[in-house]
Image (cartoon, rainbow, N blue to C red; front, side, top):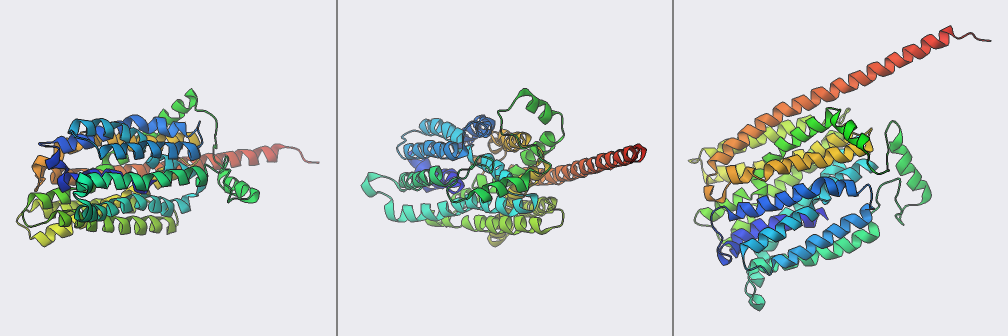
Length: 436
């Protein structure tokens, strides 16, 4: 699902540099507005979609949302005005917002902290593979299908995208396992169902009832919602290199590159993002305490170096290629950040669902206007404002990472002290109790 989710998002960027801009007479920041409107829909659907997983079986909800966005993808192939894309992308954002935080919620329901990083990395990488495949697919479609049956290559791209999406949704209705407490997956026997639930429930508030007002009190009364939301609201903006296809816009704005090359070359950044994500996420699981913070430091440093290389505009073209490819490291923080949040909120299932949804929601609240201010298409090829903004959010990410690390350690110390105090009290009671 996430593969087709990112395939769809990336296809808009690839279509823009492959003929859509000219055919729909797009100008100014209309491309950025498409992304902003999609983000608005994404924000609106985020928390409702995650809460719906408490009412409706994920095996039904996830594929249903995928069918909706697959149908809207087909509709994109028939647009004649950019305003039609605006409307389609808003509702597409609402449907697609079910997948990312919803799946992280499901992963946290099945896996222990020492298992989450790797699984989150595999999941996140599936979206990046969709981005990688989109560039290759667009180049191939433009070369072989442009003009076939009177349709432009970028229109065929959305048709093929929809054709790929629908069978995966039908597969989900049959295969998706829900959560351990409610799974009816035919490939798990009764012993495996009980094991999958029992191995996670020790010390956790596993609540599968409908949310109540007490949930709001729990969420707002702790530091977790505030700190985790702030972390991804800021660190998620380091992904602007890829989410706005800055490399593709740079190549399109300078002379000497064909449409196929403009589609192909940014794939190097996505490839490095996949490698960084998988290596970093797997490494964090192998550490004694499942430390996630080193990945955010690595990601931030890479983004700062990349931004400086691009800011120095007199630098060689090869160095700019290196900088954009290095910026793929920005995606490494996505999997580990959500694994970290799953880990922090592991003792309260419902709080975990809200925190995960809020993290992505606040990131998209910022992302709704961030590209319009710092990465407008009219700033290509240099994106000077954007590079300074990237350095700023990278430094801010380092600060918030330290804050989250500190708060988590403080909470663990407080819990340990409480347990120690209870143990001492129980011991004192036992000593005062007369024995036979």
